[in-house]
Image 1 (cartoon, rainbow over the protein chains, first blue to last red):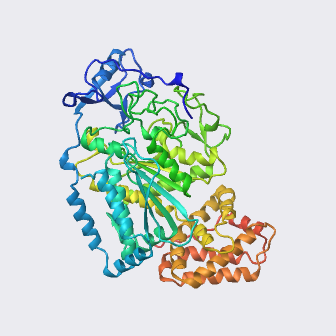
Image 2: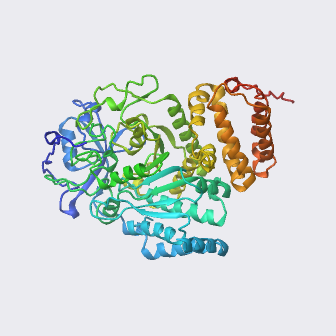
Image 3: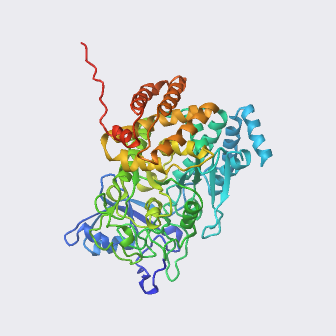
Length: 129
Length: 490
């Protein structure tokens, strides 16, 4: 179903500091944080912060990845924020990505694992295709 | 180590090219936002049509990198083990060669390992915590729609994890199924018989099932999502809504999830937690596991699909390391065990034998009715369902391996269907004798040695059926079985 145009609320975030969608890759960062009720704000009020990138927390707390803007916004609203990590916005560590060569070798190894007899069963199927 | 989108595809290409009798690679009709082709793989040994279908999806959320890798590795494991006639061992849990054979010969196993390829490439090359697809949201500096908030189930109703703000990580998109990546999931469900669905996510070690948008209740069928407003960009209205689910479906979800948890635990002791999305994670709308299960309610002409979701792997030091740990090998093993457990539980002997029957192929609704409307209503009846589920896989293995047994099974099933269609029909001595002969023949098989006690229980019950009406026979099934009490000797 299409939303009526009026109901699509598109807000331009106020530019207060670097955010994950900002164009300068070297300076972007996300903060991993848990968010807690402060003097003025209840956790239930977090429902109003629908934009935050909530991630699972092992202790059931509200854990999120926040931009600097979002941290400021939450603090302004009276929430308490505990920061645990600053994650620079960057590509995955290249050492964690398989090379094409290693994938090819892996598939070759798997192919060798098939008995000669069953391989011939495979070629029967190929012929039939 | 993690594979690129092209490398993931190369595994499916390898399987489809090398083993076309088992594997079909299908290009899905909707290319990604950036124009990438998206592929699914069907694994099935060709033995008739109308088979039960399972669909496993991974990689909807880009940064959850482990699952697409686990899925393609499992594709390879299944096909190679099947061809070699060997079993699959994952830590402390083993699946026998027969288990693998039954999965591949009785089911259509569909896998869409990387539903959001643009997102994955973006994680690998630009931003390792990116979650959404790569949609350009016009008029904003923000990109991306959360693919797993974009399906048509209470879509556009906001929660703490579903937002109408295009800059949010959980942006639901401008319309339900606005995104090619979510449309592909719908396409697979529309064009194939999908009885069981799994969407694999990370992290938290959960095995999840519907509902996600509200608490689940089993007593008030009038509380249905079909009565809720969608696309409002407001929280659920009414706020206290509790979505209905028939008790038999709830029991089914709970039972299957519990077995998955047991199978994962057997690998290396990890304790996944089963539960509904709403109770276990948080309120969500527009998600895949809810959508697939909702389809038969929105449109009663469609078959029922049981929708599950996993959250694989634990929290490990920080979010980045939890989404893509340096060494995901052990977590992938748990994931593969969970997927295999679900696939194995999707096998239904009666449906498969029914589909082999020439006269009235796949017409097994009467058996489903007996199970769901009758046996599932009492503890004794549920005991019979459990017994049947225990013995059905080895029985099916014996039936597949022996043509004469297979003919007997088909003919008995047809006779049982005839009887069940008329409650006043009488089971004759000949009917009972044929059933007993079939059970005796099964009990002689080595592969059914572990099931002899259950077969004896069925035998005893069948003997009582001679000359009785179907109504009386069914009533007998609801009487509590007397358990033999063994005296302990010191």
